[in-house]
Image 1: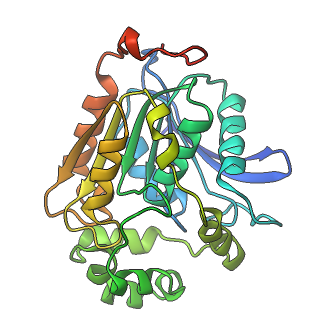
Image 2: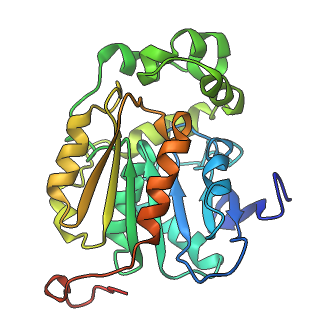
Length: 286
């Protein structure tokens, strides 16, 4: 079913026993650029990422509602990050892609790391926005975390707008209203399984294995994922750079899209190059 424009289709796909609601953008012109696989934040339905697909017209973009979020049915059992990464890889296969660029925001940034660790032969570039290394993260403000775990932020738009700045570290405005309007409450089981997925998980022991170019994006007013987490990622990843969104909160990808998306475009359009000294047996570099 096409929405927004002829580039976008939204449909249901069956991956094993799980049904996923998937958004897929085709490039306006086939330039051969690497497709982008996008992982959204916790409880975030794919409508919240429609802007990203529309602002990257030169490449295919693929994203999906995590089980139990948006309109994807809730899973029957809890899952671990490696299982969801495998599901995403099967989705990539279904759409006929091998190499992909991978991007994730917040919870989705943790999933992007898991995917890149698990399938690093297939990931050409990695973009991590407002995210952490998992259980080893520097925690955000307690006022933000407590409201983030409150299910009212999904069910009560007035509650969300009143607490928007406390939650995300930026003032509520037109972008905040757009965010609240597009948000769809996840199922309680789906949201709980998302929170449980990364209990005990950290990417720190594996980050040195990720040799692909990596862009780290962070807002200096993010009250959920403080800037220290971006510095940890930037230090641990061999080929990373850090771009700070000045006065950006946790939702800078949406609220500051005009500033952020060009940075992403420039990074994705850079020539892909890996030093020969960094090539390891069994790791695809092109």
